[in-house]
Picture 1 (cartoon, rainbow, N blue to C red):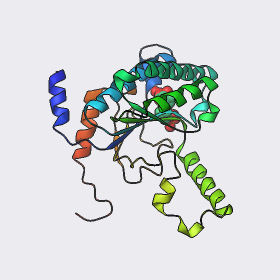
Picture 2 (picture 1 turned 180 degrees about the vertical axis):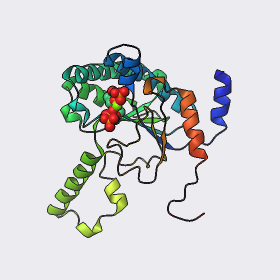
Picture 3 (picture 1 turned 120 degrees about the vertical axis):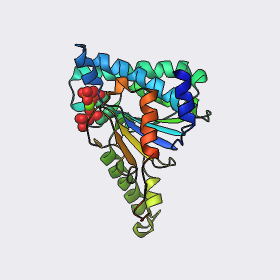
Picture 4 (picture 1 turned 45 degrees about the horizontal axis):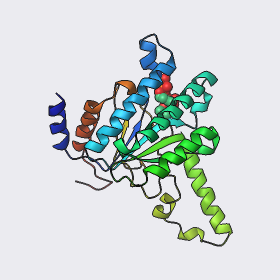
Length: 244
Ligand code: IPE
Ligand code: IPE
Ligand code: MG
């Protein structure tokens, strides 16, 4: 089975950049009569598996939505549990870095996170810079609208300081002001968990992305599911506004 999967994966074209909304942890736990945090724990394992699989199929960028600017609305207990898991995850990722060779980047306002988590994110990004396989963009306290407003503020500040002129701004120039500066737009955005919305994820970057929705809950989303999403993507006709 494992062998068959590998063969199937290499035989199909893999996009450069895939983004995933890692949704459904809470429902996965509820179905089993477990606390929500148990779902987040298994969800973190699912991420580990997918990040390693992404490397084996030659994906260049994997962007994952781990915690949104809206997720602070949840009960303190759940937010605390998620933050603890993230800390634990990053500690382990830093320890296993040379084995996994994944380059870490972080998108979002990290200043609102605990000093310990901020420090781990900084170390993970700094030490993994040298790896050349897949780059994982971890979206933490990320919101697409906040990202766009922050970019507009940065541009306005540069204008006020006389460093640029409003009419000189281009789409490419604006992209460079986002968290994702330098990263090509995702060709494919995957949302497990059954919801049919973006929930404020990569609003600018996914202008022409193909969306793939599945009812599979994130903790159950494995390499086979990723293969299915890539196969669905390969069957799409991307016109970009043209006619063919
Ligand atoms: C995604 O799973 C994880 C985060 C948003 C942090 P959820 O916790 O949203 O799981 P559901 O949607 O309630 O099942
Ligand atoms: C989106 O999932 C955010 C993450 C997966 C981190 P949510 O569960 O927060 O989204 P909604 O509430 O269903 O829109
Ligand atoms: Mg959810």
